[in-house]
Structure formats: structure tokens, C-alpha cells
Amino acid sequence: MGMAAEERYQNAFVRRLEHREGRPWQGVLKYRGIDGSWKQKTRMFDRETVRTRTQANAALAAWKAEEERDALAVDALMPVTEYVNRFIDAREAAGEIEASTVTDYRKSARRMQEAFSALPLRDLDSKAVRAWKDSLVARGLAPSTVTKALRLLHMVCGQAVMDGDLPDNPCQGVKAPSLGSGKRARNALSDASMDRLMAALDGSGPTPFHTAVQLAVRTGMREGEICALRWRDVDLVGGRIHVTHAIGQAGGRFYVKAPKNEGSVRSIAIPHDLMVVLKAHRDAVRGDLAAGGMKKGQRGYEAAFGALYVVGDVEGGFLSPTLLSREWRALATALGIVDTQGRRATFHDLRHTFATVAIAAGEDIAGVSGTLGHSTVSTTLNIYTTARERSKESAMGAVERALREHAPAQVVKFDRDGTQG
Image 1 (cartoon, rainbow, N blue to C red):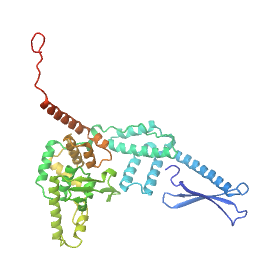
Image 2 (image 1 turned 180 degrees about the vertical axis):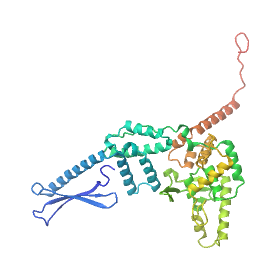
Image 3 (image 1 turned 30 degrees about the horizontal axis):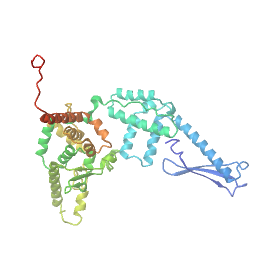
Image 4 (image 1 turned 60 degrees about the vertical axis):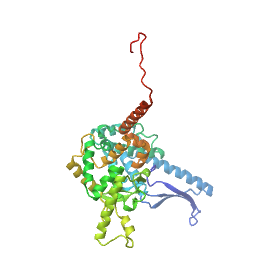
């Protein structure tokens, strides 16, 4: 952001005003405002001291440097919350962030209001940032919520350093709150709950909801990715699911967007049991279409079918993540499905159940990370350390058993007096 957001001088030049007496030189600074429109500032240079183009360009450079210094000084005096909001405004106007991300940023910015609405940016230090973070934790906000707010402030201050508004980043070294017992979204289903869920799914029909649950527990796909999945993204011949979109939310509405990160655009192998589920659901959808007069083989049928959402309706609508969560909550309550901490399981817990089971079974961590769509393998390791430790223990046990099979007969040692040692 640097200078005031509208003070980005993207073009500067000089021109001679032929129609003015003495043909004076004029400097022009052009910049793009927050609304995207071009604006400009002009300054008439002294005719006595600026006579040539070279002198005019030198005067222009001095004026531009002066304007930028003044703008930087103004920005450094700006209250932290205003600076943060202008940062968000600029990123939004430039189209650099998704609408759902803008909504999240503004929620985080509001959490800075009480602490930083009157504090100039230049006076922000690590002590103030740490006190603010601790106050949010003390208010009972979820660790993930506090972490999001701290991450936003860290990013804004990092940009301020790059733009010369701060000498260093005051968020550097301020640790995010420990998830501790609040590691809510990282709990897998309990073994008993898994038994109940799989039994319930085995006896269910090929409905959009039950298909969504199967996708979550058998592939680890995110809720928004499942809701955005279209039939054209499902290759039942090649046995792959291509994750290319997700459902986002902003301003009370849902919309189709790009996935969470670059790693989230991925291809997932369809396991056998899920293949059976998807084929049954596909046949049910085709039956619904045929009942409405649209049959396979008709012109345009394949394109129209491919555009339908897998867990949507035959009119072309998708199941929103909110409705999906609501249906899951009703099922989890009815069946008593809980996580490993004994709390009612969330739909997102199905994703973590998939990952936990896969890693505990000894699946390659890089492969699991790729299936989950994590940006880095380290993300997977950090989240699923417990499952990985169980996997390592299991692997070490297998190695011990294998070595034992090849070990020679046990040698019995005797002490010098002939007794067994």
C-alpha cells in the first residue's frame, strides 16, 4: 500500500505550455485511485530557474520525491485499523483476493478496532501486538480466529515495511495461540462412530447427501469442493476425480470459485467402493432426467449432464455447504456420531478421519498430502502428527517382526560357574 492508496505515481512527465507567456515548463504526476480511475497532479515550474527540458526533468524528480516523502509520513501517522482497511480496499479493487477472502479479512480487521483504532501505525510495536493477541484469547475467541486476525496484521505490516511506512514488522516473533484442546477441526471420528456411520451409509440410497458423505470420508475432499464438483469432473472410466472448483461465501451468498490454493487443484483416484457409490448416484440422476423427458443419446445430453453438480439437483443447482452441514448435523445427532474427544462430529471431521486413517495405515505422507490438496507436505505433517506417530510405531513393529523371523536361535548364556545367566 505504501503511500496513501491513491498516491501511487505510475507516470510522471514534463510538458511545455506553449500558450502561456514565457512558455513555462509544467510537471505532471499521474496515479490510479482506489476506484481504478486515473488522476493527476500538476505543478508549474519557475520560469527563471527551469528553462530547459533537462532542468524540467530534474525539477520533476525533486517534486515527485517530495510528494512521496510527504505521503509516506501521512501513512505512518494513520491509525492501524484505517491502514489495514485501506490495504484490504486496495487488494479488493485490484482484484487480487476472492470475495470470500475479503469477507474474512474484514472480520479480522474488526477485531483490531478496539485496540488499534487510535494508535498510529508508526507507534505499533510487538508489545502492543502481543497484548492485543492475548486479549482476543482472553475473550474466548477460537484460536483459529485469533490466528487469522494476527496473520492479516502480519501481512499488512510486512507490506508497510516494504513500502517504507515501518522500519520493521512488529508482528515478527509474536506467536499465534496454541490450538491445544481447541484443535477442534482436527479430530477424527471415534472407532464406534465410524462403525455406525459406515453401517448407515451401507443401507442408504444414492442421494446427493449420502454421496457427499461418501466423498468426504473416502477422499478427504473439503466441503466446498464436494459441493462444487460437477459430473464432468468425475471420470468413472479412468477412475479419477478432478478437483477444479469450490463453493465460496461472501455477503450472504454462495458462489463458485477457484479452490483454496494452487495445491488444491488436483486429481484424486476413485477407490472401488466409492466407484460403486458414484455409479449408483449417476444412474439415479439419469433416471430423474429421463423422467423429465431428457434421455441419454439426445443431442446435447452429455454436455448438459456434465454441467450438473454431483450433489446438486437436476435443475443445475448445487447443494450449499450450509445445507450440507445442516443435514450432517441431523445425521450425527441421530446416530450419536462423535469425534475422538466425545464431541458431536462435524462434516469437516470426515476429511480428518480420511487423513488419519490413511496415515495410520502407513500410506505415503506425500500421497496423502496431494490427495488432501495441502499446499505443502509440512502442512499435512503438522496437522496429523499423532496419526503419523502411530503409523511409525506400527511400521517399526512390522520391521521388528520381520527381523525376528530371520534371527538365529536364541543363545543361552551361562555364567562362569555353569549357571544360567
